[in-house]
Structures are given as C-alpha cells and as structure tokens.
Length: 516
Ligand code: AHR
Image (cartoon, rainbow, N blue to C red; front, side, top):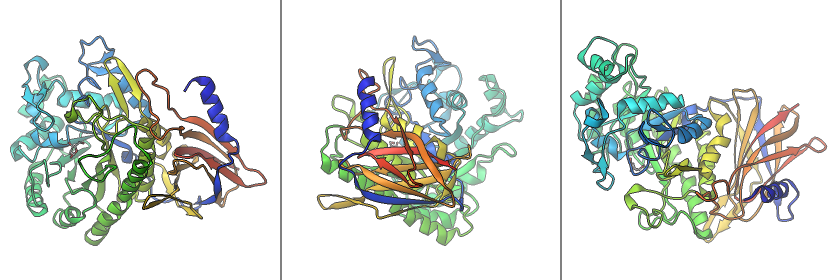
C-alpha cells in the first residue's frame, strides 16, 4: 500500500463504518493486577532446517551481506526491535541428531554431516555452540539449548553442559577457552530430548521419564550455573505425557514442553495453502488455533493434580501455523508465506497464553526466520518483516507485564459453514512502563465491531496504539512490496465519559489506555 492509500485507510479505520456490529463490552479490572506474563512467552525457536539459520540468519563473516561475526545485521537488527526474550536451538527434530562436538573449533575443520531430519542437505556445522551464544548475546536474549537424547549419550550431554558452563580448569572448560570463549556461556534452559514420542526416539512417556532421570543425575554444570531443566512432553493437547512426567519428575524439571501446530485442514496432507485460500480456510484456521486454549487447560489440569505447588510449567515450545510449502520451494525447507491470517493467529494465541501466566511461562513460535510461521523472510540480501513480526512487535508491552482480568460481555459470534467462533478476543495487562495495555483481535473477516471499553476503578480518557488489518484475508509482504502490510496508528477518545473502539474486520489492535 503506498503512503497516500495507507493514510486514507487509516482514516477509514478511525471513522464510523456503516457495517459495524452492535457494541461488545470489554471490562478490565485494573484494581486487581494478577501474575506477571513471563517475557519468555514471546520466545522464538530456530532450527538447523532449510534457510532457518543458513542464509536467513547466518551468512558467515566473509559474506558481502553486512554481518557481525557472521550473523546478518539486517535480520538481527529487526529481531532486536522485537525484544526477542529467548531463543531455542538447535532443534526440533535436529536436536536428537545433533552432536555438539561437530560444531566447535575452527570452522573450516568442522564435521560436515547430512541433515537427516530435513531433506538430507549438507550440514556444515558452521553454526555451532559459540555462534549460537554470539547470536543470543547480540539479541540480548536468554538461551534455551535442546540436548540430544535420541541418538546421544549421557556422557556426551554432560560434557556439552560442562563445556558451556564450566568455570574450572577442567579439560572441557579449557577447550572452550582455547576456542575463543573465556567466561562460561549462560545456558538459561536445557531440554533433555525433543518430541521423544516421535522423531526423538518413538518412546512411551514412562520410558522417557526413566531416561530423563538417568540423564538428569549427571547433567551437573558448574556450581550455581546448572541450567533450568526442561522435559520433553506431548503434543496436540493430549495430556498423557504431562501427566506421567509431572508425577515422575518432581523436583527435577522446571517445565514440561508441549507442541501444537495450527493446520487449516486439521490433517497433514494437504494442510492448506499459505496464500490464496478462501473463507472456509480462514475459519478453519481460526477454529484450529483456538483449540490451543483447551489443549492448555487439559494439560494444566494434569499439572494441578500432580503438582499443586506449581513448580512445573507448561512450556509450549513449538507452536504456529503449518501450511503446504510455498509452490516451487523445497518441501523439506518448510517455507510458507505469512499473511494477515498469521498475525491474527499469533495474537489469538498470545491472548490465550496470557490467561495462564503461572503455568505457561514460556512459548517458542516455530520458527524465527524463513521456516513455518516466521517473523522474517529473506531472499539473498533482501528481507521482509512478516505480519507475524508486526503482531509480536505490537505485543511487546506484554512482556513481563502484570496480567489484568478482562471480560467480554455480549460478544458477537462469527459463523461459517458448521463452525462458530467468538468475534472478539481480548487481553489486558499493566506493563513495566506503568501503562495499561489492551490487545484486541477481531476474527471476523468481513465485519468491523464496536467495542465499548470499561475500566473499573479508573476514568478512561482514550486509547492510542496501532492496528494491523487489510482488505484481503491473505494480505502479505513481498520482496517487491515489503511494506504492503504494516500496522497503522489508531486512537480513540471518550465521549461523555464513554469510550468506544472500532475494531476493523480481521484485525489485531494493541493500545495504551489513557487513564485520567
Ligand atoms: O518445527 C518443525 C518440526 O516440528 C520440529 O523439528 C519438530 O520438533 C516438530 O515436529
């Protein structure tokens, strides 16, 4: 959209629209701040998969693409703007095939392997442990390293932790120093295996729990630097892994992971295209993504039963949309365009995660760059910010904010075919800057909605922030039109003490509330 068209569109969003629905009322209780929404709910996942690391993030120090010690300046700069709090690496399925020694020492001498998880391309191991921590340090992010349970050994995993965190004169700590890193790396989180029910070894939860206990015994780390340990759990809502692991691993894990991907057709083949879909797949995508709430509830119920002290978190360390690969791309690279629909999906999930701040203390969208529901897509030296990037950007105030109860009265329903979903989704929080933020989503692809805002205990003068919307359901950015879809400013003022927000069709809005 060019500047003039965008200005007109902004105006149109702010003015009255004849096709708006009747008022939905959102009530926020600002007098009852709840638990903090952990910033790591906005975590990211990066895997050795397709262009997810190589080319997308890592170009090597000798590249003509501007970089800092091999990491692209443009991509890292954009990610810094997002305030990425946490990065998970090296997989995914790759984690259980990853041997850390392949990725240390002089780059030209590193072991080249075949990436057995993802279409057998050469894995040069140019990105290894030192490079990963350099990326995390450039981003100012916490680190989440996923260990190899499936094809590794206890010794290998214990050595990796000692190599990364040891501050002694042990041979492993000295080797790290020889490789250029004097002080220990800060490993914030460490997972023992990934998807151990599938690509991580096709185990049963009881067998995994026994192995976890064995590994956990020997993963010591230096004094006071033991990473917080994560157990690899189940998927798609089934609470059996959460149930078994929360009984078996008491005192030995800070959280159990859970994976759930939003697939429009609810089946793996075909999944549905990223672009050019019709309203049936708009609806099915929204329906499928809203299932996240029930999946979380079921798993938290198991945790509440086995861990009433709330010592174990539910970590959604892989989530996002998964479509058919973009036509003409390598199907194993999981390249998919990213449209307004993805931004709506992201925001709906954020609003769900915010409801469980005490259990859902981490999530990692899959994946950061070029793979699945990416923040950024690259093509040689070009980069585009996706609608999902913009949703993450708009929601930055929610990182480490105090959640606030927000309820919706008279919500509208959106129906298509046999499906019906609520039109408005909401979340509210008191951010670290002291302001009250409100996030709203309109799931209806064709109707704007009036939202009356009522903040208990406070007089509200107005709101200002940004809204992301477009005319087409699959509006997206391209390398030739990288700014086609961007958030625009939005503000509304109270009239006679009453504040009403116009939430455009298929939109994501985040506003700061001006309290008097
Ligand atoms: O994110 C892509 C893959 O999805 C991951 O490697 C795996 O953990 C999951 O099945």
